[in-house]
Length: 218
Image (cartoon, rainbow, N blue to C red; front, side, top):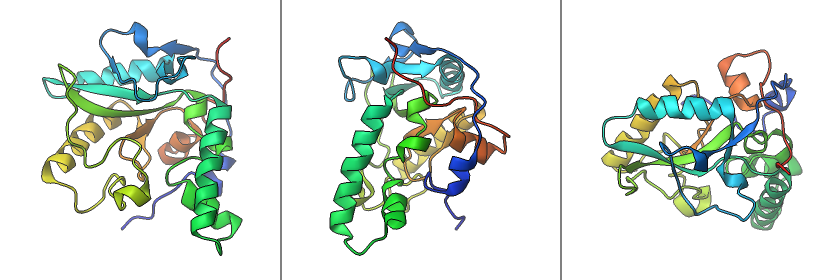
């Protein structure tokens, strides 16, 4: 099995950022895309993506088989929210693994929540999404979006064994459409795809990331 590069890998943090300055745009203004409300918040940050990411997402959706659409669950995540998610999960991991070193806790945490300093969501280049029918009915993908490794027994991994044939086929459909548009997957989360961030740059062999962390719009 090919070794998985996680977001705790020092090579990710070592990628330089050549910020291109693309704005954050609102998925809610795009009728071709469906947006789920499970991560909705009053500030609307979950519905934002860099403009280039949005364009590639529309390109990927056009590559889906007839009758299928993407259901976007979360895009941009403010840095403060990312820090709270990470700290909460890392605290739970430290309690479950009291003998683990700080580096090991960081590695374990990064399978589910990225360390804030390298998080793809905080730069507007990442999105969590799943597949649905034209009328919004979600397809089986093996786990819920955002299922932890613990609660899913590892089925959240993109290439996890033991999921149903239909879930495996649906993950393959997602992969084909999204990779054709230039996205990369985070292999511990079948729903997480990104473009332009440090992780994307490392996996794509690019000299620099296009997007760095950005503050929420005023």
